Each structure stands twice: as structure tokens, then as C-alpha cells.
Length: 86
Image (tube, rainbow, N blue to C red; front, side):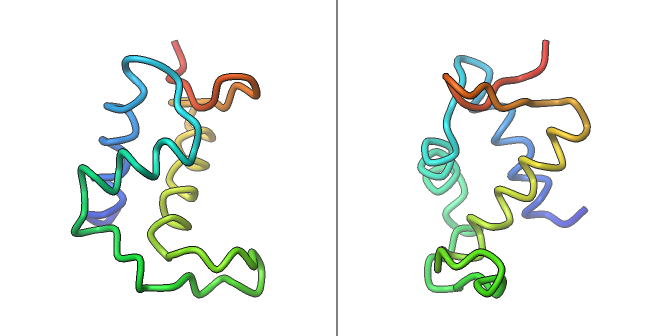
């Protein structure tokens, strides 16, 4: 697991301690807490699969969310956003 992935995992858990968050809310929090890992000029190389033209760091954050969900650490509540599994 690389440094960015570890940092994103920790920051996601930290952000979700108080209340559920949507992915766009997590983007803002992570960018504020980890500016060195959030380069908006590095475009996602997976644009052919997900043509959103968002930065690579947002793609990686979503990948971390998905892995954490598979590990039963967090889940996505359709009404309120991402939450920590209790």
C-alpha cells in the first residue's frame, strides 16, 4: 500500500467519525488535509472508462473508498453518504 493510499484511508476514517459524508464532501476534506496528494493538474488516465475528466487523485480516492467498502470498514448509505461500519 503506497503512502497516498494509506493517508487517504486514514483521512476517510477520520472524516467519517463525526457524521456521514458524500464523496464530494470527502473530496473537499481530503484536499484540505492532504494538498500534496491532490494535484488537480494530474488528469485521470482512466478517462476512456470514466469520462468525467476529473483529476487522478479523485479517481484514487474513489478506489480507496471501494476497497474499504469491500473490507467492511465503510459503506454507502444512499440517503446520507459514506459511513463507518459499526
